[in-house]
Image 1: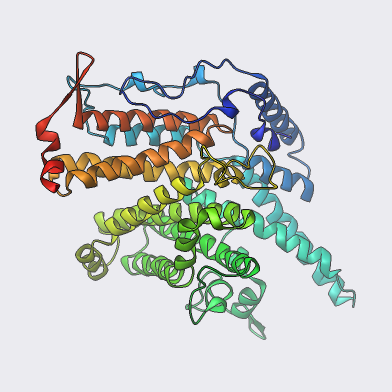
Image 2: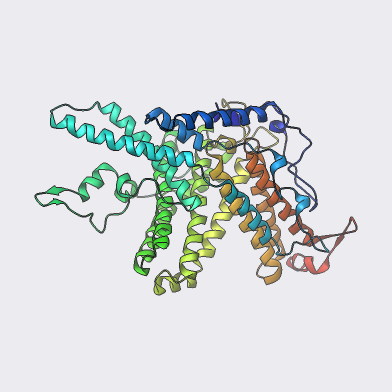
Length: 495
């Protein structure tokens, strides 16, 4: 009930439409709506569910583990009165409506809000509980097998499915919040790969083969294709391709946790460089195998079947967040000299980190523009529940991942726009494009705010920074709009 109550649609806010903030002091988050019944319902169910799970913490049960995983995806409702620095009016503007750090202050404030949210310990608890139950089940199965009794295959398959669900959730949560994995690489290998690397002989178990990587054989090497699938294609073919792409997304997050883990342990340069190259190999595999299909999906969003629309948006949003996190990891490793000098030099020459960030941020803004609710019926998901049929964006079950994806892309785009003013690297129309793309991300966060107060808070902060950046071009003096020729010279010259 706590999970489903996120989509409660009884309030005026759930039916409100996005409107851009035109002035730096204008507040997009406070719309005059008092706390209504559905907000009270969400808060009540969330608190009740937390108490129930804490009461059941000592029970080792698959049902309890599943409930913990589901609750880990549920956004906590926060009253707007508890927000800090969420309103546009709290931004510290200078004499001309400027912020002191030209958009980068906004990024710090967004990051602070996300850090305060932290990570859900219930995902970690559920993953650990399922790991323990799986271990007990395997020991029990070996005992039955030695006596000639086989475990029912359906029960084993169900257990594997639930365990892999926990591994996926734990992997994403660990990579995003930079915490240690709950289930180690060795304990989360596919059975065939794990047994192949630890075959028993007379001298006992062998050590894992050095060239074995986390489930690469079962995810990447089994999905080699002669050519990527493109649209138009039958719905079933596209659905199968999305099913194949989902584990690759998790694989990149897993590679990120590997880099983070090696860095925290103080591993050698060779090991960290190998982990970086391993992650980049997954990135290249996705681009060659699935990238063209996802580009087609974004461009033809309105023509896709509703099921495909809702599915690909969640997958692509997660993947692009992983790409941007990967860029951050590589930058830190190279800047601190943790990677090998040859690889570091090569990445600097081609501008790899900047490319990953620009590509990721632009793709996220394209996804936001395609998937947010529209004023017409073009983007509606027919036959879907009224709470989510306005746009594919609203179907995301793990809201936190998309919040971070849009927030990260929005702050990157805002930073690019701010940097372009001082560096002169981009023409005026490119600067305006950065701001328009940032607004796409703000709009997506605003609509996710229908079921997440955190998303609405981040939309307010990022929207405030966006309004401040727009005011650099159109200066506001004593409430009267006046053009600043120096800010518009690049736009004029482009004509």
